[in-house]
Length: 278
Image (cartoon, rainbow, N blue to C red; front, side, top):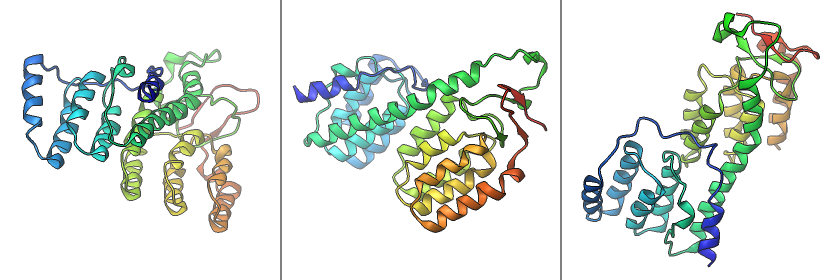
């Protein structure tokens, strides 16, 4: 009963999930044939093949369940589920699945992973939806190039740094990809690459920083983000992520002396929308 209850908790709203795009369809016959060959592989090789298969072919939660059942190790099984969660679109019947773990704590970890992700996404979903749909009355939107548009962030009036924060879908993909990396250096490198040519809000940055345990790693991410921060006047909020006095002082120095050099325009108290200068 406990297993079933935990799985029902996984049956959450999936509207926040990124869609599995460009996946290949596979016939039932071919799928069955592939699955039969997977049973014959050593665990380490199967782990790689299962993840590759999930990335390429159109999957649902039933398919994931079948692939997960082949694993002999709880650790390899949950690592596969973490990976599949980032790629599979259709989890509609997940609550009917019984993922077998020798140690029930692994199932609880997966439930916690899903719930944590959903909670983080729901915290920013409403604001990002507002960003995308904000009404503009003073200008004709179609006449303004996309790269010049800067939009209102809820609860924020002040200095604009980068262009508008990355979209909900783009941020979700980044967040999930960061989650499945265990090594901090890999996380940082991935973030460095993805943040190029994207704006990021302080709320989004805070969510990313929560994925790191060590303050040295958080500071590297913070410094990498500076040229991409949209709502610069909110940057002081990041200081709450740190205990180290020197890191706090460095953030204070940046927020008190460097915001002008990072800013490109301002939102006044009465404006909801303004356009970034090139």
